[in-house]
Length: 322
Image (cartoon, rainbow, N blue to C red; front, side):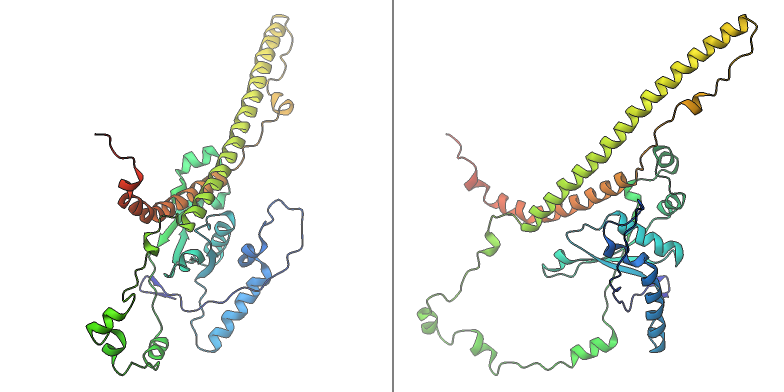
């Protein structure tokens, strides 16, 4: 529900698993569950669910969809296509909420809201992500997704329930928490057990996994660049052949003009030669945006490790020779 330029999300429901028959189309999704919001069966299911929510007096406006991610790996073609489907067919103000499961497992709920930018929507409608079209529109990988500020609020019913939960307090908190005398404190073998877990120098497992994902994305980005370089080499060879053919045809026409013969057509090269098709640059943009996402996560994870290494650097570095 859109209230005073604020989009409120009050309810959600999952899509059922839909078996997609295999086809030979090149636009088929490699991950069918990720493409569930675009399936016709789920569109009907979504309409029926919203109808039932309206019958029980619940907000029944479709404002977007949600998905889960692991370590921020949500910048892919499926996410883009799903969000484009919602913004194009439903409303340009629809959003995608991303729940990062790995970050939430650390103790803090990780929810982020995104929307496709107007410049990317215009480029996606034309469905042309060539070098020329990108230069003309000025589209960059930073312009694909717009992150929106998100605030989480409990409903009044849930807040009332939390306030009415029974809780019990110990009869004497001081007695149950602190020792009654110095003698009992001295007799305790370890009155204050230290916690050395925060001083461990091992690498954060999330940092290690994010670094691996970052390297994989960089490798995929390098592969896309190699494909584009191969296209440029093929295009250069074909253009050289066309130029040589045109020069030869001009020389033939000059000789025929001296012999007072009709000239040969100079546009036959369009039938004789076929220029290679430029591969789409959308994957390059998505990989670049995903690399930026992983780099920010590495920066955040490495902050704690760097602080620990800075504290113990005097024990790790060799002593200075006097």
